[in-house]
Length: 182
Ligand SMILES: Nc1nc2c(ncn2[C@@H]2O[C@H](COP(=O)(O)OP(=O)(O)O)[C@@H](O)[C@H]2O)c(=O)[nH]1
Ligand SMILES: [Mg+2]
Image (cartoon, protein in one colour):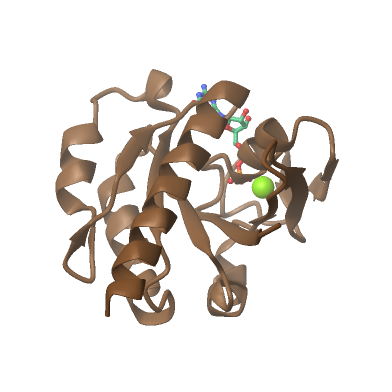
């Protein structure tokens, strides 16, 4: 049996809590509380601690899914969480005008602290976007000279969450192959 630590990163309101809940479907520690960060966003609730879920896969492997707090002042947690991570799901709110800038700065943090951990980008809330940002985001998604997959994602949908996870597992296998080569 193998265990994988999967870290869900992304800005506030990008769908991290929703994704962890969708994938786990019921077995999640819910940490959303009333939002005290009124400047950050106008959501009624927000995440102060981590979302966490344990998922047993049919083949006996286990996923440990960690959703990071989205408020700006918690960014210092990223490097800590990335330690020992098998993979990263990076969420970007595709309805935000500045989503390309957000993707770029997140990838910069990962370039510094990700130490080669496989990454897949999930673009959420596309149904609310005024312009489709997918092409621009795909062009931007390069890390350590390698193309990072960019996948549209409705975080509320379990199937789409599982598909995103599937793409990440594929990346993790590819990295493992390359790693064992030399
Ligand atoms: N319309 C729409 N809403 C979404 C989508 N993905 C997530 N959401 C919603 O976006 C809001 C913010 O998600 P949340 O998980 O709290 O974001 P977090 O701050 O990253 O944890 C929630 O109300 C979700 O239901 C999507 O694809 N479309
Ligand atoms: Mg949250």
